[in-house]
Length: 247
Length: 325
Image 1: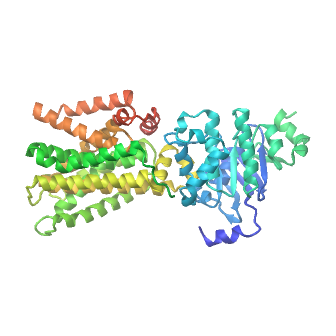
Image 2: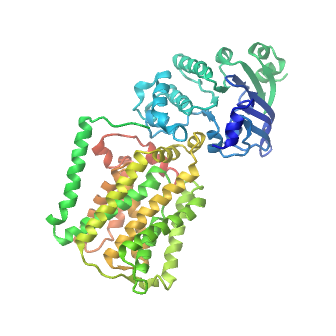
């Protein structure tokens, strides 16, 4: 990792800063001049109706897509246009809307694969503590293709935890899971944020958003239409319009 | 990562079986006639070739139809360097053969491994065909007449050379892919490339590394084969059926497994020789290969090795890899 990274890491830059980012697909504007930043240990919820550009914004931040305009900064480093693997190595980690697991590998190997570009000597230790935190140690030798949908969500979440990232992007990580699993994930987020990890969370589950997010960013048609704490957002007319339809 | 395997009964049995297999392989030449020894030498070569193809096809999940080119590069490098005007000894030719094949693999794999699925398969096939046509018209490769090598008629030498090369390839692959970070990287990109990249894995680099490693092993066997047969021509060392056999051997034995390709290689080669000795030629062998592919894909997606090793993966792996075609 570059010395610039270490210099930036120790400075006052926010872990993640998205600056006036836009992305177009043909004639469609998926993300339109969006700015957003998240502080150390902060949990920022990104909400909005389907098709509002939330997942695209995550892809732009994590390097899956390149923005047409704007900058992405991690710890102050301009990573705009960097390949995904390089951005990941600067300390960002993400889950996908549909779990992207290594289906021919065991749970153990999925988690170890997440550590290959990091502190390999501590990989096994980190893998075991993550499995314990997520209460899935009993399926360690199972292939991930054999797991339930909820367990697959846990494994994918575990995979990002093993990497020891600075910023974690969670894309609907509790969608469709059993309440017990949902609670395990919430507890893990609370536990990890205490260690200094920053979270950006896309969610439709408003109870969860209310419970864990310090701040919400509401997107609609690619734009940020509101920003603030849960109470402020809940009473915002723009948000009501976005969710309930325009009148 | 410090992790020492526990000495479980399963591990002890497995170690004893491996030990017995090693002793049997070393002692085999003393117990069989020269004709059978030649078949055994071929079986070792095909086991090693299947193991090599499995690196890129089974572990990285990229179906290469161009491996005959690397076999040919190895064979021709050795043959050219052993011509009387150069006069290199056999062992001296191995390193240039390996380096050249790796360089070509990097040059070809760099751009083509950014392609996915059928596009990569077509690109590698086209490359192999191009090289095949090239060696038929070049003077220094002997054109369609091929090249003769200095004869060394010692079947024991070639048996043990193949055995060492196969064992080295097998152990190398086992260590690199089953016991190292490289293995996690390559298997992760096979299963889900965007997810692997999101974990910091530089997938394009890993793919090219795996292609180069696979090419190097294939070229090594090409070199030994050329010296063994003492005569090569374009189709004997670069013909498309060389790649076809590697693919079918891996599918039959077990795609993306450690032992499967070796098992598939040995069984198919023995079948090939049996058909040849029974019917006088191997024309019927090609339809048999086709039937085997169909049967394996339909009824034994994890290959024969799954019947022995037990672990079932479902149809995930084979459908993921072949589904790209």
